[in-house]
Image (cartoon, rainbow, N blue to C red; front, side, top):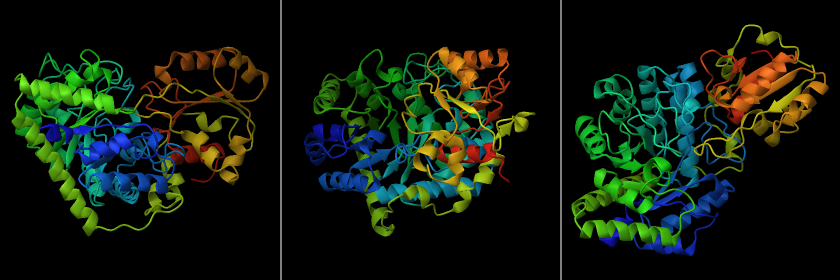
Length: 502
């Protein structure tokens, strides 16, 4: 029974090589590992790590969050080379969406990863959502459903399992479930008309796994967030929608899941509710996994739930692993390149002019005097990114860091830059007597960005505000909205600033 319990656990860990404690647990049947940006230095190092994991346990799940956009692990140090879901949704080209997913899958196969916690199929119906935003394909349920299915099909064609998230929909929230328990007060009929449509589409497309959300839907289950709700996982996802693949919990170290009870009790409740694979979080330890195992075994002993549920979960995880192992044999991939970010199978998905076409440019912004060869001051508004995005390089700063000698970068990198930290930054920017370029993400959600922009405008500065997140409907703090902050989108923004032909 302890070995079956172990098969349901998916921890993270610290470091870039396989720790001995984790190697031993994998050999004893641990379900797998979840990789984060901090575990990755290079593709070659990552492949050595994933080979070591499979050597320790050939049935191990090797999971990663590579959404092909702002949430990236493979490219956290360089910035993602893809346009991201929001831009793909604005293109509304299903083949382009599938092409991105195929390329992501190819990169993950080369790296040795087997499960990708993507795509994000949430409908971003609330522009104040602090955690979804540009990770979403958009606001129209039918369009999001179509792109979600295309992404799943493209990824899984490369032999990597998709994990559509976050069931039953995290788009209509104004809170981050990493930090709190969001509430979505929608009826089941309302959910069927909107949030559930993308999940129906990915199930029909053959998604092998679905990830849960730590959100409370009081009209479905007033007591338990979705991850911990048998009514939502067994009743809605399994019975009504007919999903028979692996149900993966979102990370149990998030406040929305374990903020009250702690991770071990949350693990018991998630398994009992119907989760098959428990994503624990990052930087987990041997002692922590031991505590989780002991709590689950104690719950089985005192009758909180039945051992058949653990056996079923372990069987689903092992079945997925065996299926993916066969696909790895049947679908060989080419050797890794030194820089996968410049080795895309389909160049059209990295077309700068096409990315620029997805920008929302407000009337008059094209005439900002800083465009072209003019000088300007850059105010980089570095808000704290949500935990899902993490510390990945973003926007034009990612492009100039990786490509300092390119003609595309020199004009921008040569401008004076001020990373906004305090009010005196405004004085410094104005003292330069040049136009001011303000660049941030989700500008309307951050008071310090709003206040800085308002102050610049009040003092007569010639200011252009770029929002590389999901902008507010009124566009007050988004003269240019790029709908993403990947390295590719940063390159496109530089092109727009230089007034290049599009």
